[in-house]
Amino acid sequence: MAEDTGVEKEEVKGAPEEDVEINDTDIVFDCPHCGHNLCIDYRGAGLQINCTECGEAVLVPIPDGMNISDLDLEPGEILKQLFATRRNLQKAEAQAAEFAQKLLALTAQVNAMAAILRGDAPATAEGQPKA
Image (cartoon, rainbow, N blue to C red; front, side, top):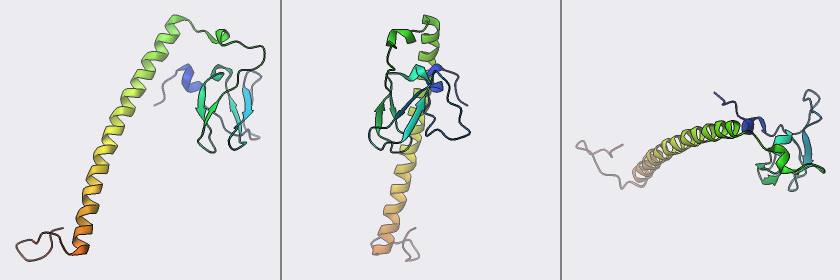
């Protein structure tokens, strides 16, 4: 379930399509790496994001006449976003640890299968290679 934070609302929408509505406050720009057209909410000005097409890091431009101080939030909103970010980080770290365990288990399985195919796997009591 997605948290309702300002940061998540700054998600890159990707190339504008006919069914995508671009607001007057959106920042529309091209990826400097691949030229893909990107669109982001004005609150994303100055952020570094990944291009939805090539995955490269892209700095969202700050429109002329806009200052980063225009985006200042109330302390309560900043605290809310901080807590949401910490929760998301904890979830991501737990998921990364889970994936690391799965990767270790799969690596062990692949190594065991490779040993069987090479014929150097330990034999069971029946004389067959151990699976």
